[in-house]
Image (cartoon, rainbow, N blue to C red; front, side, top):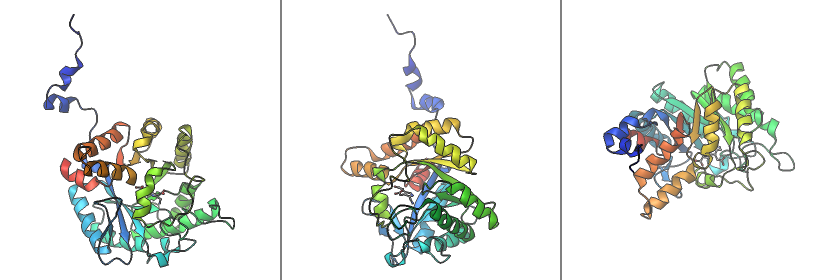
Length: 325
Ligand code: PBG
């Protein structure tokens, strides 16, 4: 008559649930993406990402120090140049005086090795057409010409003090090409967190707002088709063969199956990026009173860890790190 086996026993008190929890979420697992903008006199809140700011050089330093004090595992920096500093090649990306490289220098001198300083190695924030690479005469993204630009950008970021580069442009051969350029310039110690499996996602919408992107068209000739799973394993294998130190799956929430597969086979640490649209959806629903904000944030991050991420990039990194510690 009675059930012989009762899984509910292990759910009966907070203490026993804590004892048997399979997945943990700690401050060190979380990386905070941050935006630093040129020509701002004060930080500007991003309209579609309430609570996330385009920082000035000063407010960036302060927010970065707070995040590090809260215990986050690292910081991922994105630069937002002034519109007049954008051009077809994204020159400001490799200029030592460009907004991102200046910010990296300042944070590295401020924070030293107390955190892991990462930089987005991609041109879209810096090009006037908004694509992640340079274009051919007919307007296609030119893979191999773009690799030369990534190499220059990567060396500039390493020179500015980044510990880890995040090539996010999905060009073929980018990891190997950047590795060779870094080694050639003597930066053998600077690693790469390869955006190995990056999908062409509608959920990047608010990010384009965050970096003032002027993208015309879409990124479907270089980012992956959401319909594909195996292709991600191929991308991961290639990035590993080219020398990736860690690999990433992005976005997170709609790609947890891909994340699990990558985590099962990856010999290197695996990161997942809870992107802008994931942040904005939870924020907006919570503002309407439709979901419990704090619980939804923790559940989403725990799920990404459960799916296999060692490291999670999230705009809530600092907040959650303080909540957890
Ligand atoms: C490309 C890049 C993007 C994001 C991170 N790096 C945008 C894109 O591919 O269109 C998205 C991050 C987010 O949506 O939070 N430099």
